[in-house]
Length: 287
Image 1: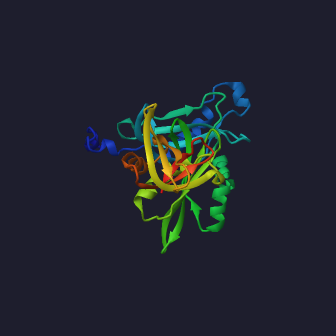
Image 2: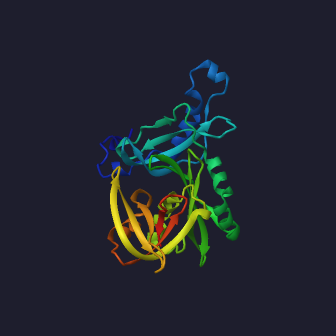
Image 3: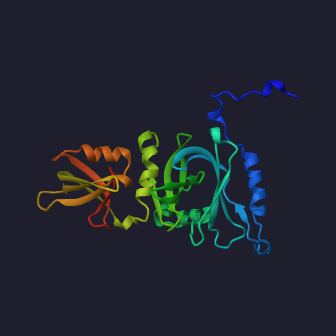
């Protein structure tokens, strides 16, 4: 009927393809029930149900970062609201393929509702939201970070009638630990880009164990663990006490913080936020 359409797709167009969102959602609504072929499980209502809306994000597929449609699913009407898996539909030359990734039996990953509840009840986040009732949460995303599944929740506020990012909260999907980072300057693109990394570095760290250390660098020693550089810094805070030893881990720091530590020299001034519950205190960020 349309012979002009019966032609190979231009190569420049293929990378721009993505799975149609409405079609993707409709397929899930059907498959959430009809994937079940066991009659006993069918009678027990062992089905799936979608949670958050479909998100188009960059996610790892077979070791490669790929632009894809992602939607999370839970066990149908499960009181625990734990995550059962996720649908992934890659874009580009893989458009048309849909994966359903199910978590192994015995693996517990909290669902989006539980993650949102963990954030709003976290003392640090709760105090910030109390001080800033106008802050609102954005789209929740699930990412694989450092071998774990981490929910990322951005928060937005207003500045000069503009909506700007003000905080990022993260939740460990396995442990329900919460980390957060309040953005001090929304106009600083470097700080905004590193906010998620800083929040991840604060996972499970309470404000009571955080301390700011400032002084002059007296020693620098580096070594490598599993391909990640670590630095042990000596920082003298005053002339009457011995230097304080702190540990900085590349895998928990932003790229900018890594550069600062890697290029710092003996005698230079430095100011770091550390977690004092670790021995030696672990650097959370360079200030």
